[in-house]
Amino acid sequence: MDIRIFTRVFRSPFILSLVMFISVMGPGIITANVDNDAGGITTYALAGSQFGYDLLWLFIPMIIALAIIQEMGVRMGVVSGKGLADLIREKVGIKLTFLMTIALLAANMGNILAEFSGISVSSAIFGVPNFVALPVAALVVWLLVVKGTYKSVEKVFLAASLVYLSYIVAGFLSQPNWGLAIHNTFVPQIVPSEAYITMIIGLVGTTIAPWMMFYLQSTIVEKGVSLNNLKYSKADAVLGAIVVNIVAFFIVIACAATINANGIQVNDVADISRALVPFAGQYASLLFAFGFLNASLFAASILPLSTAYYVCESLGFEAGVSKSFREAPVFHGLYLGLIILAVIIIMIPDIPLLSILYLSQVANGILLPFLLILMLLIINDKKVMGEHVNSRLFNVISWATVIIVMSLSIALVVTSLI
Image (cartoon, rainbow, N blue to C red):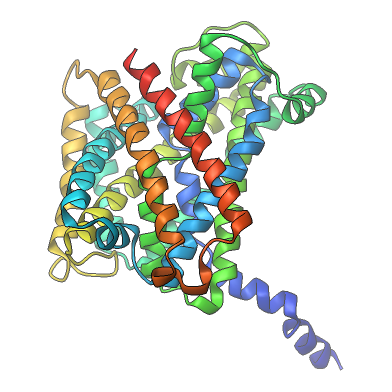
């Protein structure tokens, strides 16, 4: 009797669906979580430190926007079996794709520098000098891809995603005003100031970046998700959008409840980590710093990988974590080269890193609208997507999302240049 009950339970539709979801889970959650990188965490922390709970309402529309964009990327990857760079090349030709690839390569170099600078800052919090932390981090990141297969690398990335839960713990340790936090989550608090508007642009800009679309679709293709499992991949994409914004929500809360509530001025993550100690305790401070180190190391693995994927796809070279150096020399060579270059630049004394990071954000802001439009053109092309093109309702929602994101991206470029 017990065996029969056991068999019925594990043959239930819910359990079977859960098993199928776990088998395809990964690309959506990983891609979304990398959004909480060094730049993202710094932006969320400063939002809470400077504006308290006022910006919490923004996370609901950001979840919707990111979920829609990730779902479209997953659907294109599963249905076409091709990466986004491949599809763009087929849509607009090699010349325009090549120009876009160069622009993305330059933008991503700035983003990669941001991740290694994050490793430098967080290592310093723990007393580890640059000349030790950066080469060790570069070696770990390189070995992860060189010695791993896609499945093994994905497991490491999923484990790294779990570390983001430390920010949720830090948020609870900060003992926030939950009544005010919940109220401001559902009732927008509009502050008519340039700093407030600029912070909104920064929050949205750090949530959706061009590299994400390429990485998500490339990993979907390499993972080999079948059309039968499309709905589970969609769930992975939506879950990723929800989880990443929940983590960011708690980062804002932790800083609002401690730093903003006590009127403390902070400029970077080291300041924030130190400021948490007297109000949220040593554990919250360490959790915040450790989460930042994990995020920087995690993103330092993903950003060069994303770059290698789309450059190789755009130019027709072999690409893939599961392929050896001999099978995909350009892919592995580019991945290693980007890591080494980033470490060398970060270790140069008095490097104008802030200017580099600003320029990379400007490049991201310029490229994002073009990519979103191309995605919508491709996903509505029946030759590529067949019956899986957008519905009329989904097109309305998607275009509205794209127009809003485009407007904010343009605003980000303008404010960055000013």
